[in-house]
Length: 283
Image 1: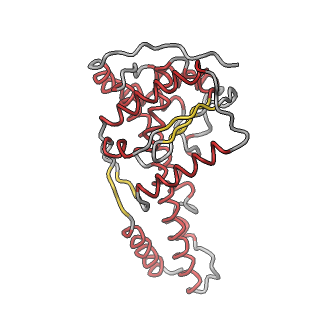
Image 2: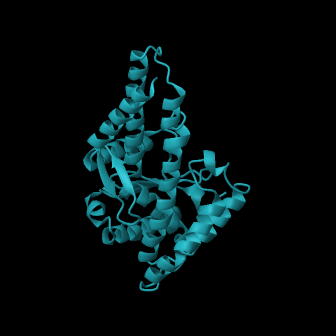
């Protein structure tokens, strides 16, 4: 492909991006590419939640000792979200939380629209309701900050750009194969250069805003550092190289949380503190 053709391709790709909506994260000032509406995201979130709950392998907890602390934390985090810079969206969401009885899975999620799930396996890492607040604050931010929609939008734009580049390459007699210049412009097929770094930004953004929500809910934000220290110990020292990982390393996460802690503590110190009650012990 000639340079002039590559330039045309990039102009066309920029045109595709221009058709998409852009928003700015109210906490970090980061610009976000968004190609779906909030109502569409909420519908997708509800559908995904229904699929999770209808999975025959998914067993909801029946134990009040597991259900009650999760619901307490969820309620406080949601109320904090309704006071946050995401208040308008948080008030639109139909919040709901399911506690999944799976002591081997240390996980939790929040979907667009406010549907949440917490697996009992996270209790051993969270240890206390304050630790769980750090987890749930993080997951709620993913939904409120529209990180899922942003990832989908990035994928849609990437696919559209690849189609444009492929068409131009075919017209130039390239047989549909991308030239090295086009591949470099896209970040080697987009995987390393486009998608993964954005995902790490999402994780860090959720960590930062999540501890602010937890602090506003009355939970000690310092528990987030203890949580990730335990995560590091239980996972054998961290995740693969940050360059090829969608998640920051445990060490990076802890360093960042410590940097943000003064801001979170300033919020926490204005709130009536919530006792850091212990979560149930799971096997």
